[in-house]
Image 1 (cartoon, rainbow, N blue to C red):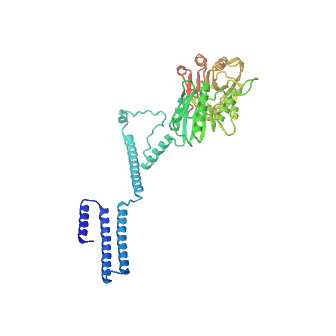
Image 2: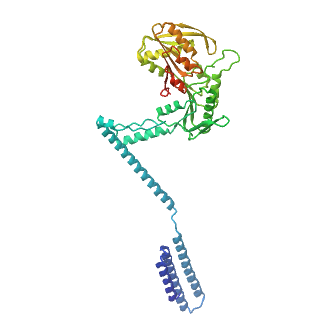
Length: 481
């Protein structure tokens, strides 16, 4: 290797370095120069050895080949090392970048939480300042209005709460509103009651499509993830009975196929409940058949309000417990606030004596009415829906009577019972029933009857005709459910 060639290579290196080729070129050139220097030293050593030996002999040739091999190894190793150094990449670079991104996200989340806490603290301070303002100044301000169909009412936190407590309270309210493990769905049977129940619970009503295809078939689609959730379906089997039952069955099937953990069916009004036994030959026990339909679809629990007969609970198997809620609790609170004179609770038939007795005991226990009487009307039916004769058992003269029943269908029995009680000297006649079907002329009969007031629950959706009836009062069963 001549000095002229070394100078030309040094000039090439200088030009490439000046052109900005980078660190790798400098390192590779430096190592190549080192290898060339080592090769030159080996070549010089070989030349000297060869000169001392006369330039001939096996030792000279062996020394020459060894020196050449050493030089070649140095050149190859230097080139390989330079190549590895030039293309070297850290295998943890991608993970380090992701870790940095995650750290940025965490810092941003912490910053947002801190800002929310500061905003909540500022809201508490603002509330405290507003409470100190004069009443006249607060009256001049326009109240904020909002519409929340299924969300709970937003209340200002107490002023004595710390910023951390306010933040935790807001997080709890948000989690409750979205109901992580609880889902509430409704069919078309009584959507208004379902919205009331959702508002009382403080959660949103589940998103679902329950409609009809062009040929009238039921179309059910759930728009939320229910896998592993505790699902409740509110669907009374009121008129149209068969449509509502089919909607309920298909909703249960859909939720089971969507891997819901548990399905509880809330049936405020249980249809086909009056056919609970065979009164004559060749008739079905429809209440039991509906129970078997629901059980075969895979329900886990049933919640009902005032079943027509208690034995309907036994139509479901032991794997499906039934809760029969007493709707009379709502009526007790309503009539307890009335100014009643010598109240008497009346059962319109022999089968409802137990229900009337519980209503009487509830008034006695909760409102200390110890002078409440109990009476019963014995009716003889000519056929279904037609009463032939009524006899009164008990004394009602000069008393305020409350007729307690589980349902009002066509209101024929109820209006005749009111006529009998007025004829026997009753001062005022009230009526209470959990389910106000009011089929056919039922609403008009109540409007033209001798009843002072008829109180029903909203287990069945209302109608404009009912709202126009001044003698009809509807109470909400949503808090009970």
